[in-house]
Image (cartoon, rainbow, N blue to C red; front, top):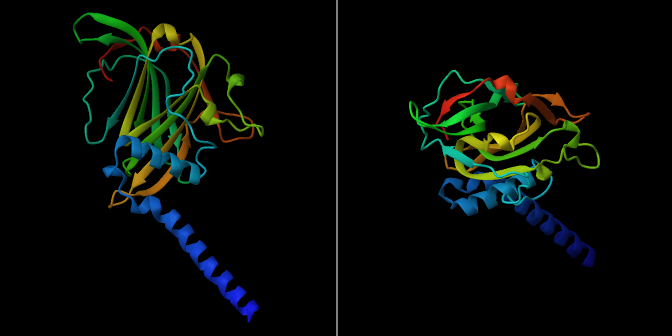
Length: 250
């Protein structure tokens, strides 16, 4: 009798455990993340990224350790797109895509450009280097977080013990509110070394019709492979950008 009760208890516990696991797995699908406050959205997405193995550890998005001040970080929502006034002649040091390894589709694009900020036809206020991440895919992707490491030497990329780049130790890391399709980092020109190694990993997500997370994934920009890992790096020199153009595009 005791053995029978024990078997029934184990069976009931297994059913409950599976139900809880299924509920956790479905949670991202069920929660309307578009209705969350920015703080709750970021916390929710961080849990999703951790549970799906997209990042190795929790991050403090305010704990970037880049040694220079970042002039601005502007994330644009698909619901509030800004029209840039940009001289189309300015050069790009880097024009690189992030490819979905599962489909071969280009999802995210990074352009690094040396520009002069100011009013078109007016005075120049500053010389800057801009890193602009734009979603190229029309398949409903959004940017949740960007992990970027900027250093003079690619060999200084933070790695885990097994040689995999540890994105949560990159010197620039930021999370963003919901439905962001474009992120622009602006650096004073003096805050970027003349020649630099840059490594970028981004966490992207898609929404279902109810505002829940239907899919999330991590994307590396194309570049030189880091050892045997999926991590990549890109090297560029600002001289490759020419003299730059005028932009007030944030």
